[in-house]
Amino acid sequence: MKKEYCGLFGIYNHAEAARMAYFGLYAQQHRGQESAGIATWDGTAIREQRGMGLVPEVFNERHLGKELKGRVAIGHIRYSTTGASLIRNAQPFLARIGGLSIALGHNGNLVNTLELRQELESEGSIFQTTIDSEIFIHLIAKNLGKMTLEEAIIAACGRVKGAYSLLILANNKLFAIKDPNGFRPLALGRVGDSYVLASETCAFDLLEAEFMRPIEPGEMLVIEDKCVRSYQICEPHPRRQCIFELIYFARPDSIVFDETVYNCRKAMGMRLAQEAPVDADFVMPFPDSGIYSAVGYSQASGLPFETAMIRNHYVGRTFIQPSQDMRDFSVRVKINPVKSMIKGKRLLIVDDSIVRGTTIRTRVKKLRELGAREIHMRVTCPPIRFPCFYGIDFSSKGELIAAYNAIDEIARFIGLDSLHYITIEGLLSAVSHPSDYCLACFTGDYPIPPPGQGGKLCLENPVALSW
Image 1: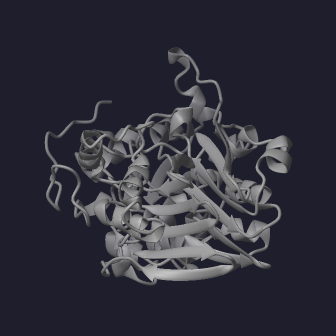
Image 2: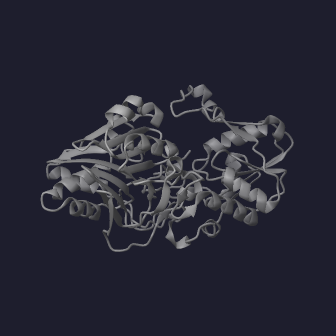
Image 3: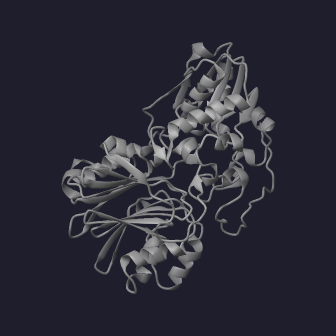
């Protein structure tokens, strides 16, 4: 199972800033389910509320109506890609530097964290967390006495390497910054006289805000006194937007990287139907991430679309984990097959990806037990063979089933009659600007070399599958 990274929301000049931030985070809950936080500027100080859990678990009416006062707010929902899942690592991260109060929210992953942390600690910096996001605060503080706040933020961004979309609340100023390659999404919108910022435009839709434009790679927006200023803070880099936003992470009703996610996923399914047709009784998704690609496959192939797997929408993050002798229970409780649809049928399953293969194997085994005659699978991303260092939770090659095994071996392990992954060319045919995307998890060609590696990561020490 893939785990999401983080979601950001910011709003400037709104009488109900905290409440708007709450709903903006709620709309993006799929991006992070470990912790949530909101920070507001009340005209004198930054107020904040952070906690572990989902957005409705962290905030109540007392927080939104009384404690989080002010017309400017930023919010963050987190899944940890660096740093443990602890309350001290929840964001926005707060600091006070002289007369300046700062709250920072970060989506992404830095690749030179260890190097910078060692340097800063040797100069006297004391870190409060284990997250890479705190690096920004210490770099800003290091330069703030020598330059303006804007210059200190730009200098900090010039030192870090990796993926970052940032929201920074500094007293009454709101900053939005994107790394030079544009790995992570961040968009600007407007509702009435208020400016809003979010990782995904589905947050704008909930608030009836107008989507204005994406934040550009290497851009810094400064919002102050109802005025928006834009700075290009570095030389242009090649865009390397995360293709997994369109494959899996983003909500289908969002616009991400100027692409409508729903349309991209349908196009991926249609391309799969061209690349790997199969004689089956119907097309079915593993809900929810495979639904829209399965619709595309069905429409392009002429095969009926059926939802023969039903998702339990009331299983939350805090569901009690079963004992070892019930280790498949947590898989079964999330989705369950419609038994009458399965027996004697030739099934074509469309899903977004295969990472480790264990969850899909359990589901396919259940379909076999229910009497499926054939089970075929089509996947809307190429084989994931390399770890991601920019914020997705497959950080070691040993976790990736496709890293060391041929496709026919993977099909045997899962229990499939046939398996086809979309080609890289097929995947890129579903987007408007194919050269703008990071494909490192498929190819091993890293736009920013990971620590101790060159630009190309090679596969070593193959591990055989065990049945």
